[in-house]
Structures are given as C-alpha cells and as structure tokens.
Image (cartoon, rainbow, N blue to C red; front, side):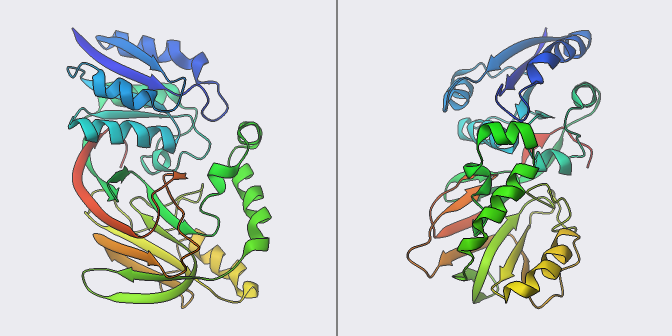
Length: 296
C-alpha cells in the first residue's frame, strides 16, 4: 500500500491545524495512501524522527511555517533522501509557501495538489553547512521573527513582525560588509542584506520579482546605509520590486556568495526566519536538490 508521512507543528501560526487533520486524512486515504503522523513537541525531535524513520514513503508532508519546513528539508538532505515534499502552510508569514502559490489556511487545496500533481525539482541554498529554502539574511531587522512573543504572533500574525521592527528603529546604524562573488568583491555600508532563493520574505512577496527557485541562482538585495529620511521611498520600491536600478540598493544575481561583516561586534544572521550561523557566510546553491509540490 502507498503511504505518506505527515509532520506538523501544533504551535505554528494560529495553532488551528489540528482541527484540519481529518481533511488531510480523508484526501490522502481516498487517494490510496496510508497516513503516518508525527507531531513535534520539542526542539530537535523532527530531525531525530526523520533520521530514524523508514525510507519507503511516497511523499512527506509538512504543516508549519518556514522554520518548520527548513527543519524537515535539512533532515531529509542530511539523511540523503530524495522523497517528494508537500507543504501545508500554517505558520505566521509562510513566505516560501506563498512563492509556491499555496495560500495559508487552504488545507484542502494543498492536499489535493499533493495527490493530483507531480512534484518538481527546485534549488535550495547552503550556508556554512546548513540548508535554507527561502532566505539567508543579516543586518538590522533580520532577527525580528525570533524576538516576537509567540502569543503576539498568534494574535496578530505578520503584523507582529512589523511592530517589532518599529521597536528596533532606535538601533538603526550602518554595518560594513564585504560581499564576494565569482566576478567581484565589494565593500559597502548596509543596513541589511537578503540572499533570496524565492521572491520575498517577511510577508513581502515581490522583493526580487525575477527570482526563480529553478534557475540555480540567488538574488542578493542589500540596503545601503542612507539618510533615514530617504528610506521610506526606498523601502516602498523594494517591496514593490521596483528597486533594481536604485542607487540605494546593491543588487546581485549569482550562485555563490561569501559575506563578511567588517564590524567584529556584529555576527548574527537568520535563515528562513530562524537563527542562522555566525559570520562570515559561505553561501552556495544546490541546484534541483529538492522535489516539491507547488504551483510555480
């Protein structure tokens, strides 16, 4: 009999996915799949479960946000498995799912897609030995998602990130970075940088409108340290995907990056909204490394 693994995070987003489990069971079982469920209860248990699970599943489904998806992908890669992955977005921002054209809360639609469509091969990123599916970031604001209270996330969703970001305005300062690619090396004072696999992050889905998860390339977006008064217009352009020629932005499209912070007091990064490795960063693309269900 065909079978699938369903992994879900009961604490993601508004914590309501548990009420949708029967929808998943019904759709998968009607399609002829035996469903095996794993509910995460503590840090590290998803990775441990995947490292020890049977490998004869037809596909793995994960319900959660970008952070939960990241954990599953890293564990699958660590074990060397190429089992197709389905996503049911139930986190706060769900940036990667948005790029797959999967709507938050549309459990039935996501499950139907998994059983009726074929998976496609996509690129994933590798930074200092850790995989990322959507974004690697550094600088100001990039740790916002980690510092937001869980209850506030549940109550306000993505709005909680923006409110936390406003709190950080008092810490606004320029940070010196060196960005090296196969073609050149540049030094620039930035407020923040994003290395994007898909088109957006933080609920803004058009930051890099030309981004593709199948082209073997990343889109680098760096916000130059400019007078604060100039930032609102610049950010508006960035969020609308109209920034490429703006002098306030460093925009690069490459498959490999080395990113160094020239300020020894700053070293934090994030990957897919969670704490990432310390600087410096060695970032490379793993082309067509993951099979995934999506509309792209």
